[in-house]
Length: 465
Image: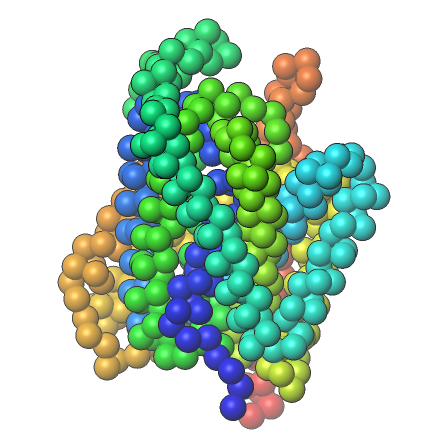
C-alpha cells in the first residue's frame, strides 16, 4: 500500500508551508512601522490566522477530497464556481512557487557574495532548484515525507535555539534594549511607531499576517494523507499555534537584544545581525537556507495536486491524474514546474510584477471558504459533502463569519494601487503593465477559455451518451 502522511507529518507539512524566508530575512519590517507595539501586532495577526485556519480545518471535515479551496468551493457552490477557484488558485500557486524559488536563488547568491541580479546566475540556480525538487518528489510520498520532516525540524530547531539563546542573553547577560525602541528614528526623523493611526495599524497587521499564510494550501494533497477529514482539522490549528509562538518569540528576542540592528541592517539574513556570536549567526544563516528550501519542498507537494484534484473530478483532461508506480503525479508536476519556471523568467524574475496574482488568489479563498463552511453547516451545498459530520455552530458558523469579516477588512485596507503601479527612480508612479496583464490573463481570459472548453467537452460527452 502506498505510504500516506500521518497526523504529525501533516502538522510538520503545515509548519513547513507557513514558515518561509520572511522571519529570517525581514523580521524588522513590522517593528520599523509599529515600534514597541510590534508584538501586539503579531499577536493580532496570529489571531486572524488562527480564525482562518480553524475555518479551513472545518471545511476539511466536510470535504475529504484533494484540492483544498477548489474542492470546498465545488462542493458548496457547484462546478462553475469550483472550476474558477481551482484554475485561478492553481495559476496563482504555480506563480507563487516560482516567486519562492526566485527568492531562494537570489538569497543564496547574495549569501555567497555572487551577483543576485545576474539573469544567467538566477536562471541556472532556478533550474537546479526545480531539478532537486523533482528528485525529492519522484520517489514517492515516503521520501518526500522524510525530506519535508527533516527540513521542518531543521528550520524550527534553528528558530527555537535562537529564542532560547536570546532569552539566556537577556536573563543572564542583563541585556534588554526593548525600552530603547522608542528612541530609534525612522527615515522621516520620527520615533518608530509614532503617529500610528488605525489605517497604519491595520496595514501592519496585514504585513504580519502574510507571514502566517501557506496553511490554506495544505489540504490540496489530502488524497495522500491518512484520514484527512479527521487529521486536517486537528493538524492545521496546532501548526498555526506553534508558528505563532515561534514568531512572537523571535521578534521579542530581537527587540530586546538589538532592535536597531533588526530595523536598519542591509544584510541578506537580517535576523543574524542581532547576535555578535559568529556561531549563532552561522546557525541562523543555515536555518534560513533550510527554511527556504523547505517551503519550496512544501510547494512542490501542494501545487501539482491542485491540477490533479481537478482532473480527478473530471473538470480537466484525465491525463493529469496519471501517477508513477511510487504514487507521484508526474504529468501534473511537470506542467506545474514549467509554469513555475517560465513565468518568473518572462517577468525577468521581478517578484513585484507577478506576486499580485498570489495576493488576489488568497482573497478569493478567504471569502469563498468561510461561506462554504456555513453552507455545509446549513446543509445547502450544491455538490457532494460528507454527511456524518459532527456539526458545531461556533466552529462552523461563528468563526467562519469572523474570518469573512476580517477578510473583508483586509481587502478594504489592502494597498491595491501599490500592487498595480511602479515608482521609478525619479519618483514618477507608472502603471505596472506586467502585473495588470498577468491579472487579466490569469483571472479573466484563461478561466473563460478553459470554462468554454470544459462546457464543450461536457456537451460532447452528453451527446455521445
